Length: 80
Image (tube, rainbow, N blue to C red; front, side, top):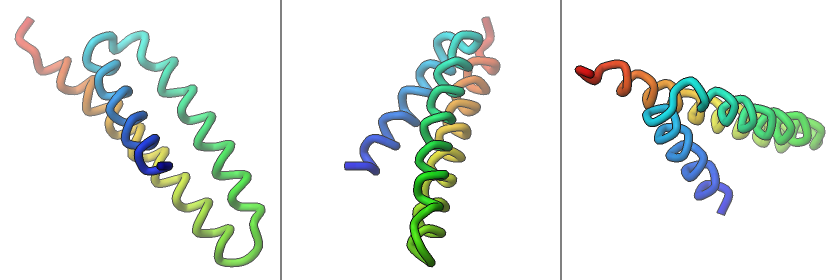
């Protein structure tokens, strides 16, 4: 279920980045705040579990940022 949510956020950010690149930065910052909150909460778990949870939220944040940039880059390549 969590993987589905992350994929949904990535797709939504890519679509927003393509359709309205200037306004999509607000959505990207909001998702970054959510991932950062999960990363901090996960890092408080003891031992290797904390590192694993923290790393997974960091990778999810990175994937969402990359999909947002891909949407903006695709928009910039349009001929009009």
